[in-house]
Length: 592
Image 1 (tube, rainbow, N blue to C red):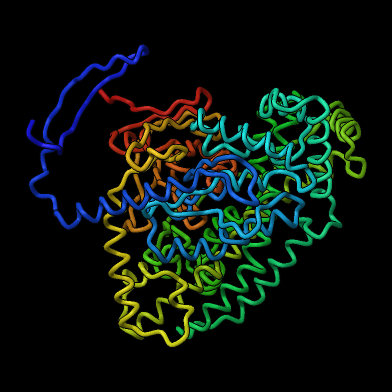
Image 2: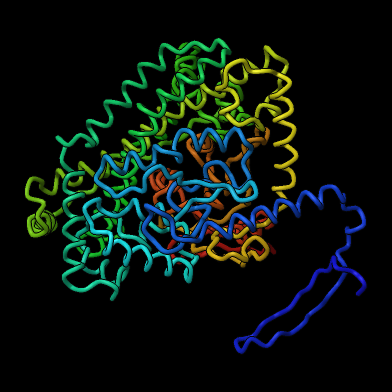
């Protein structure tokens, strides 16, 4: 064709025969900026060189190779986006994925690779090192030889089943003991361990899990929440002076009393849900009973909507409302996103009907006896059925509450930067491209910050055009991005049809009532949507135990969590869509 800028469409059949459909020159090639093309090539080359090193065996880390994903474990694609700006990426890294993630698991008795950062960036795209994540899900006392077998098996399985990338804690790895542990060992570990090795592994998981349920342990839910309350008290003393030396203190307090205890409580949440699901798998509880239990768990989101209903025409209550919830913003780490006390996200004229939480799950005598027997048979001698369900309830509530509290420190960090920027004529956009570490240096020079911001902004623009797969396990992935299919998580068993409306942190206020809301990734800052009468929810990213999955169950809202890039991009272009959670289907509805 006399051009190397071509678009090729082809099909490969099961016998690997290639059928060429069409070839054409890329239509807008002539308007491409040559300087940007060269920058793009440099990013790809740099990313490719990084790939040549990362898959090798690493000292102090179990596993012969690695897999990187945008959604495993601390799921950066959902929390900070696929191509975050430098400030949000660096704050998330500083507060959680550098050291806090592993410190929390170490305290709970898990095995951790020393001095390893969980998140890395490829061409401006954040990824989780799944090998490190899987290492940290193994009991500390498990031998390295057994651990090596398990980690290599899981990594190989993930390579061949990338669809599991946002479900590793339920459908790939075993992260704690459960009452269906024998079945899980057969399904998720399989033949790689002998019968005796499985028994050893199972006993270590049991010890770790029993300690987690022990209210007297150092890392129990009750003791961990005490640190969250310390942070809450410290936040009352905060006064925004717009001074950069405030940031260091806010980060330090957030790590010690915020993200560290939250990381522990998040693990309690996973343990609780795993135990609950195992009772369902053993047919002691029905799916409907589990749903009933979960939906009656009252979290901070319910509190917010109840409080919002009470602020109408009452200035004092309105003021208290924004003191309590004003720090939340859609995109917790994004300085470009305005917080609740900066922008009105709520629907002011409508009272939201909160689901009555008085139809709690009531176990019959047979179920109680079976669960108590289950606990005794599995060695949970100091706990009965009631204490088990209290633990599961408290774990879910504590996880959401601790997240709500520590995000106030994140918001305060951003508010200090905004005030500093206003004093020095540096707008939010410029601040958003500066790494947080640059604000922690002594004798900061404004001109240097501006240079750094412009450089990072230029990189961001080029990196945003780079397409990388959700799962990276091959050195060719800098150049080849395989088509990724996701299995969404459907919440409730309801069926709903309506108009889809995509929202983001940057949108102006719109009428959401009667709409099915589509969000790329939804953190606590998006809880404002529940002050509107929405009828359904779809997120591009998110797992079965993610923030919006819990919220949707709580509000009995039919939801599709983590549908993936391809389906999401289709749905936003449809005029009318249907969500059928019972049949696990989401599709376009053709109107007559």
